[in-house]
Every structure is written in structure tokens, then in C-alpha cells.
Image (cartoon, rainbow, N blue to C red; front, side, top):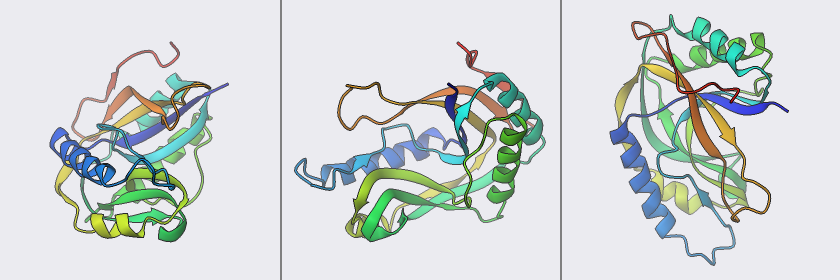
Length: 205
């Protein structure tokens, strides 16, 4: 069985801190008895997914394909602001923070990442590309109040100079209730003008 993996833009440390502090405050407003059981993102886990792949049989081939497809692309200026929910606020599965893409370059970057994944046989997730940072997960919950509370959230623009490939490890059966996937960085692919590739470990280990 293949690995769950995704390629994403990771905010810099100062933006991650801002997100983590905001989500910690929001989590603190949610009592344990809340029947919606919102699962807030872990500190340091925030990212903007370009492509998700439920099964990757050959991670090394995927890394090579992503490197070839993305290494020539220019760095991307992005920011964060506002909030929303998928599929809708009153029946939410995902509560998200919005992504600002002033130059409109993220969709093309995502298309190249998806094309590279397909060429590597990695079967990328289909559907429209909707850039966001996941704040919390739910099961058909009404998160209208959370969206209103997060409407003023914003983070300064930054320049994303690399794409990180992660392995996503699901919790083991019988693990702690409500525990989400564990995200492990596998490789970092530099965009234009940046060193082409840094591999943190062999993805087949």
C-alpha cells in the first residue's frame, strides 16, 4: 500500500507563530463539552497544500518529477486573511484561513505539481484548487461563529521560495481519540534561484 503524501508551501516561523497563537485562542473558547468536537490544527502544522496524493507507490520518482516541474518556477508572494469553511459554514468539514495570492500564481504552481504527480503515477486528488490553511476539522458542524471571530485575522505577506513534500501518517487504530494525522517532511524543492532539492530522509525508509 502506498504512502499518503502532499506537496505544500510552508509559512515562515513568524507567520506560523501568529497562526498557532490565533488557533490556540480559538480552541480555548471551545469547551470540551461542545458537541461539534472541532479538531484544531496542531501547532506548527499549518501549510498551503498544492497537491494531495492518497497513495504514492514510488516517492523517489515523485520527488524527481516535482523537482523537474517546480525548480524553474519563480518564488511566490502569499499572505493570509479572513476565514471560511468547506463545503459551507453551517455544515462544515473544514474551517479555513484564507490565502492572498496578489499575482495569481498559485493555481499555475498547483497545476504543475498535480501534473508532476500524475507523471510519477501518484494519483493526485482531483477537484478545483482552493488555496487555504486548515484551521480545524469538523463533521458537518456550524462554524459561523468561528468564521466571524477569525474574519479579522491576517498575516503579513511573505515570499515562498520552496515547496515541501510531506508524508502524512494516519493515527494507529486504538490511538488517542481525536488525534489527527502526523505530517513528516520528506523533501524540500527550491523554486527559481534556490538550490534545487534537499531530501530529509529516504522516503522509502
